[in-house]
Length: 416
Image: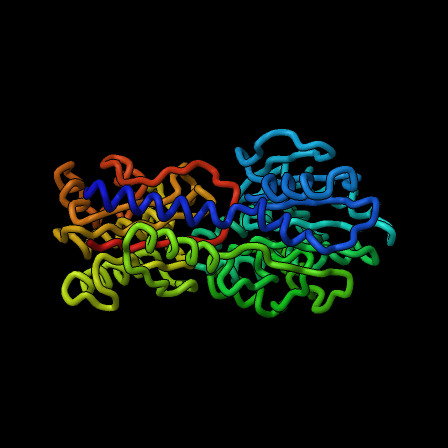
């Protein structure tokens, strides 16, 4: 692999992720607000620790009580006045329930003279959960696993999860009412749909019971009678005790990637921040763009960087290991086989792509031949959803570790 292109790609990715780390954004968002003497803080999601730490540094002794619920391995140590729980993702577990019970007790203790500062980031749909009446945790786990194994979008998955929960789809805000909530949100969904981020615990739900049931039918998901009863109970469509502000999203990450690329001497274009299709299709699309640039210097002349944001889905057919970004990268390698001076990369900005420790993958015109020389068939690898094993074998994984942020996926094409 071209060492300069690889180095530049990783530098652009690092700069983009750094730009959407939540500390500065949270501190900036808190400026200008007049807070009561007693503030309760609840931080939920993969970026919960960083967001809570920023709130602690800004508000200090005004924080009466704080709670962080984040993914295993995403806590960075103790924070004064905060209790920290780590729990399961993308599937909730017993720690999820314990942490959410604690959050509900804290919420019920709030009076009209207090304020709940609610810090929300991606991953909250799994990390913040309390099953609705007649629904058990095992129901939610089973339904979530079935939907994740299908090619359902995160929006469809969350439409179902919201109607199975006591805290999703605006229901948590109802628990806090009449006390006020200031919600700061780090967006990890396309078009920043606030009722989808972490399944919208403190935002009016735009999905309906019928839509949730339609998703169940579309993907032939098996559910219990209790879960079906819960799906028929409507979520709140309006809330009067919440003020919400987005503090980071994929658009900011893409803009930072563009600036980083231009500083390195590339012509840079943001193609879209809303890519939403199957990972293999996205890989073929990006490789087609790379070929067009090589052939005709279109849509931008070399040296160039094409920047794409969004979130793809994977149809799980095999028993291999991988994630959507690794599958996208490996799929794109097919279309650029033999091309020189081209690199394509795809990463999850939270640093964990699927059930792996990799953030994503980085490929070039030699990736396919290097796999073939190892006796591997790329077609078979993709059919078995085993992109992680293949990319690990040839050194084409991107590993960042947990980044402490989460704003969708970032894809890059670099051409010299």
